[in-house]
Image (cartoon, rainbow, N blue to C red; front, side):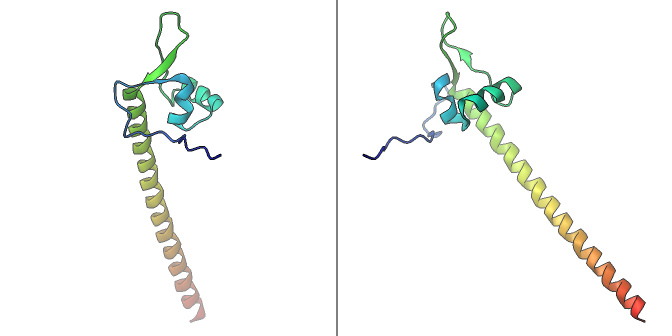
Amino acid sequence: MTNTKSTAPDFELLRPHHVVRYHEGPRFFGFGPTALSVKIKSGQIPSPKYLSDDGRARGWTGDQILAWREATDAAQAARKVVAERTAKLRGEQIKAGLAAKRAARRKAAR
């Protein structure tokens, strides 16, 4: 029997007031439980809020997850721009180096 339940989060349906429980975190953040815990401790992912007085229930609001996702998307876009600029610059440096070598060979051949 095929499992038709999707494990991918539907961010379009996530509302700012929606509460995502801690056990659903890996689905929304894309990391396993251990990696999620490490990234929370390092500050890369926002800390879940306590949802009850006894401290057993924890989770994130939709606001927190959406803000994290926007920041992550912006950081990825910035890294892509830097990588493209670096590749272009490196390509120009390689072309300039090859042109200089050709000029040196022509000069030596004379």
